[in-house]
Each structure stands twice: as structure tokens, then as C-alpha cells.
Length: 438
Image (cartoon, rainbow, N blue to C red):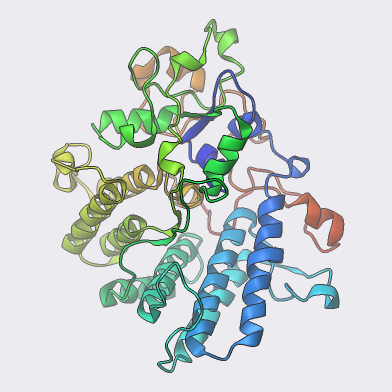
């Protein structure tokens, strides 16, 4: 998900002289591509099955609560990819090999109710399970649960689902302020064989550098004088930051351009060698708080959370922020309307999720429609950069989506199609998940 999410959020493009991820760059994806099959198997037959096994064996209420939170997280991710997923009849093994696929809205509501019940059942027992993620802190697990609630509430609201109810719940959560500190991250990797971050390990095993920076993220970092551009994006051979047009690798020649590796900014794999896997960053949390306060609460609190979100991301990368927030394009007080401020929150969240959580970046682009999608084609922008607003999404130059535009979901896994007769009819990449109502 980190990999294809990076393409869909337009952080990554396929390197000109390599070919591993042409399909992701050009959105040439259907069920036969098997994009989500491994994720689907790993989540259901691995993570969720393991969680169920633990929950069937333990009685400690704190352990059960932590397992319930992880279960909610896993189903949230599944819904955000597929919309409909097995839920009410899932994980029954041979007792039910053809579980029904529940509507995404119902799955969200189901896991939210599960977390509420598990938290209500807490009776002060300390956690006993091994917990390298949140150090056996029940308060941290409560904070993680509340962050997941806030994330899902905002998606339900923007999906038009009981908006008034979830607005009240979101604002109550934010005003209570009972969230996790630091990041929720699986930080167990090291710089040694067999212990690398798994995304880095795959990139390393391929033996060829495949990832270059996409034009939108490079243009936005440059337009805002953002020092984070050097964190995982390398200058090209001419000493410049140059992003590659989405989906343009195989069509540059038809534009009269001999585009090579040396011409574009490669992604630096070094920061990923033993990087954590982020389930929820403090930065994302603060941006969600800022959004909630701006839309329904206190504008001064929104500003404070917005700035805290930027600061948290800089700190996580070990980069000095300096006077970055004084820049006119990122300064809260320089914005002239609440719509501009909301757009700023969304843009800086997109900038902060790069090389952190690409799945959530892609989901938030779909939910908010920010960055907006340029009305110009990739070729028009390539030939005249002045028509482009820095950071806008760009419809891939070579795009296999039948309806055009950007990727809104992934196809159902071919494994499910083959083994579960209740798998819904095939969907197009342009078919939206339930909360992507815009």
C-alpha cells in the first residue's frame, strides 16, 4: 500500500529507464493485475486471523481493547481500498468459505461500535501482551482509538452519512483532546539483513532503482521553499529538483523528448532502510484536529493545530523548520478565507504524509479533492509550466482508466473472485468508495 499509494497520491513515478511499476504509474490496473491480492491475504489470513486467535484466548480487557483497535484499523484500510469487504461473516474459516461482502459504510459503523464496547469494558487491568508499538500504555491505545474515530468520522461526514451526528462526535473528541502522543508506528526495523523496512527490502531486492519523484510533490515543495524536499528526493545530474510528469514515462518520446534517468529526481531510499511503518502520525492527527476546529469549532485552535501538524512532521524527519511557516503560501494568517485555510490544512497534510503514510495520503486526496486536479493535460503542463498551479494533481499522460481521471479505488482481489462466490461484480478504478462523494 505504501508503494501504490505513493503513485496514486502522485509522490512517485516510474524511473525512465526501468519498468517495474509502469502499471501503477499509468493506472493500467484491473483484477488480473493482482494489485491488492497480497494485501488482502495478509490482512485477512494473517493480521485479522491472528487478532481473532488472540481474542479467542485472552480475557484481559486491556488486551482485548488493543486487539479491537487493531481490528478496526485493518477494516478501515480494507474499506478505503475496496469499499465493500467481508465483515459480518468474515474469519469463520471452513465454517463459511463464502462470506458476504458488507457495505463499506456498515463496516465503518461496525468497527466503531466494536471499539466503543471494548473501551467501555475496560476495568483498569494493565496490558499483558507484548506491545512494541505503544509500550503497553492503555492510555496510548485509547488515544489511538480516538484518532481512528476522528479519521473515520470525517470520512463518514464527507460521505454524507449522518453528518450532524458525526460532526458532534468529532468536535467532542477534539475538545476532549484524549489522543496519543508521538506517533503510532511499528518501529522494529534495523539496518541489517532480514531486518530492513519491508518496502525498502523489496526495492533493494529488485536490484534496480524504480522510483522517481512525481511532478506535483516536487513543484509544491519548491513553490513553498520547503526544506523537506531534500529528505527523500534527490537532485538530478544537473543539480536540480525535477519531478516526472505522471504517466509520461513511455510517451515522452512522442513529445520529442529523450527523457533519461539523469534528467529527473530519483527517490532516495536511504531514509527508508529501517524506517518505521506509520499507522498514524502525530502530524496527520494535528491536521485532522485543525480541520475539525476550523469547520465546526474554534479558529484559533485550528491555527494552533495546523502549526503543530507542520512542526510534528519536521521534527519526525529531524529537519529544522526555521521560518518556514512565515512563507506566504503556508502562513495561516496570510490566508483570506476559511476555504483558503482549509485548503492549506489539506495541502500541508499531503506534503507531510510523503514518505510517511501513502495509503492515508491517497485516501485524503480522494476525500478532500485536495490537491485539486489540474484542468490541463500532462503534456500541456510539461510544455508550459506557467499554466500549472504548484502541487495540483495531474491526470496521467498515459491513462488506462476507462472514465479518465485519477484512481479512486483498487479492484477486487482475483483470489476472492476465484474462491468466494459472493464477491461483488467487478469495479472500475473510477468507481468511488462510499465516503468519496465529491
